[in-house]
Image 1 (cartoon, rainbow, N blue to C red):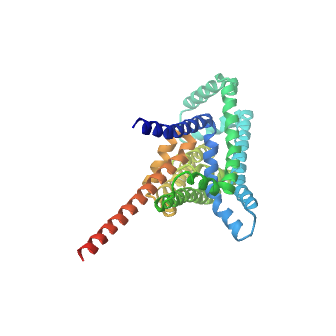
Image 2 (image 1 turned 90 degrees about the vertical axis):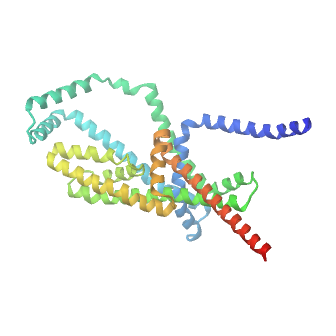
Image 3 (image 1 turned 30 degrees about the vertical axis):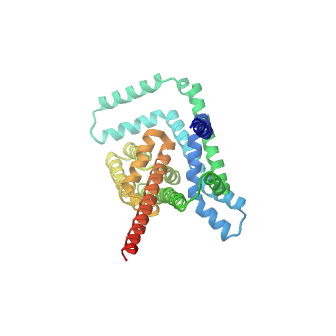
Length: 352
């Protein structure tokens, strides 16, 4: 009896040690989690293109993975970089032309019959608040380190995407070889992969459609930098529910101050209805639900819950958790139905 316990403990100890080492590695790599998760998302989105290149165009696996990675990642990086450059340029222009900006703001408020004294008070308070914030406060070591980690995660996401496209299938097969393979486990892996791929690909398609729809709206309201704003709408739409406001509100404020309050309010209403309510309540649930075969409410909750708990990485890890749970339930349900049918057949055979 004692020998059996010792033998079992010797079998369990390596597993415990392996789990401990994996948890320690995860802890060490936690600052890079965003890059790993983004790379996983990019790989799922680029995988159909890579498969098509490898099979139809007769490219090598390495070349197909490289082209697919560049086709997905390069436009996103370019859009993000141009958006940051344009934002910095606009802020620099505002700082250098404060008098023009203040005059436009006064004219905008004057059209809605706001008291000039109240306008001057608001402008004075805003200027004094901004002037009291030292620039050095935003140039601390922690801020610089966070920017460096963000850039490192961005580069890491490209590397992860490329190697997942190149060796992802072999990596998964190596992990699965550690466990006994059954028909149920294979169906579980296929169902999980299909659901996660459907979530990310569907979400990517929705972001592309929102970006395309935003172009005529920006054009009708004569908003400058249409291409940049459409690209930012695409990036914002990748994060459901929350991020579109980061583009719509500043643009509405710009129209409100530069044009007129009525036009700014009209743009906000049109933008919210066409670029927010319809895509989030109709378009995204339909497309993502159709591609992943998961109920739209579960997808919505997984994105929001994951984002609240885990930040940027959580937005994309939440749907993975939901996909794994639903895939496990689906396989369990199939196994139970098969067992029930087998039992019923056995009873009928015995009765005969």
